[in-house]
Image 1 (cartoon, one colour):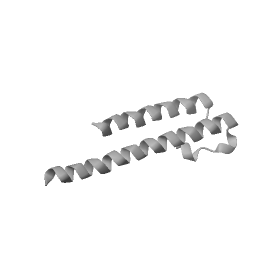
Image 2 (cartoon, rainbow, N blue to C red):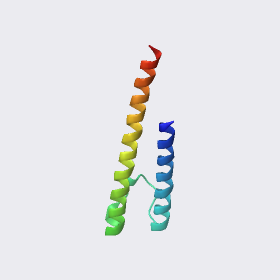
Image 3 (spheres, rainbow, N blue to C red):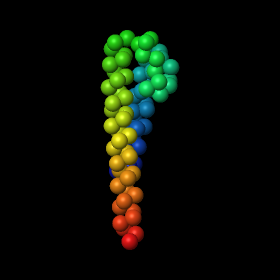
Length: 77
């Protein structure tokens, strides 16, 4: 169930990023592949913070997955 909640977070982050790309008229590419030489300082800062949040969210998802697998192994014994 927790993993499902995190997937909702990833989906919401994707929606936020898609809207930001549209609003800022930048290509919809992976956030870490944006050409920052063409961004304003405000856009660069937003993008940097977004990437940090995205990475943390993925870390949480990975942690849940790893522990879910461990729980499955423990339960099956």
